[in-house]
Every structure is written in structure tokens, then in C-alpha cells.
Length: 115
Image (cartoon, rainbow, N blue to C red):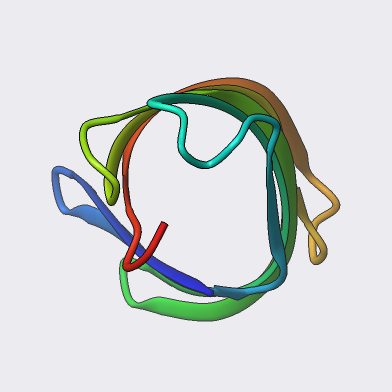
């Protein structure tokens, strides 16, 4: 589940989009959990509801996205790690049939309650 907000302004024109998404996420680690460095792959799918406001004209659009990515994670201790990812991302608007495919690089933290 996720949410996002984007706002742009150009002179007297503005646009804002508030997005709500939900869907499954799966991740698989290849090495033993005790290792300081591990490798992983993950996949996710999300269905999104986007509330749009274009200079006072409001509407709703729906979309979906899915992605596949993977990479290494380096653990600082038994609970906190730094991950590096590369992956493929697909986004499609259901309403206007537009779509985007992209390759993404990522950097993130992992915090585990128990490893």
C-alpha cells in the first residue's frame, strides 16, 4: 500500500495529483540471513486511484504498475541494512491507455524488527 502527492505550478496554472495504491509485494533473499551481504530479487503490483486537480478542474483516474528489481544489501548490524537496486518498472493508465516503461536505480534502507 502506498500514497503520493505531486504539485506543479507554471505562472497562474497549477496541477496536483494525490495517489493511493494497494497491491502485493514479494521479496526473496538468496543467501543465509546471517551474512553481512545478501542478494535479493523482488516483484510488486499496485492498483492506483489518482485524484487530479488541474487549475480547479478535478477528476479521478485509475492506473496500475508493476516492477521487478534486485540487487545487494549490506547489513550494518542484525537489523539495519543499505540496499542497492536495479529494475524494470511498467506504469499504465487505465483511463487514457497511456503507459511508461523504465529502468530504475534505487538506494534504500532496510530496518528489520527481527532478522
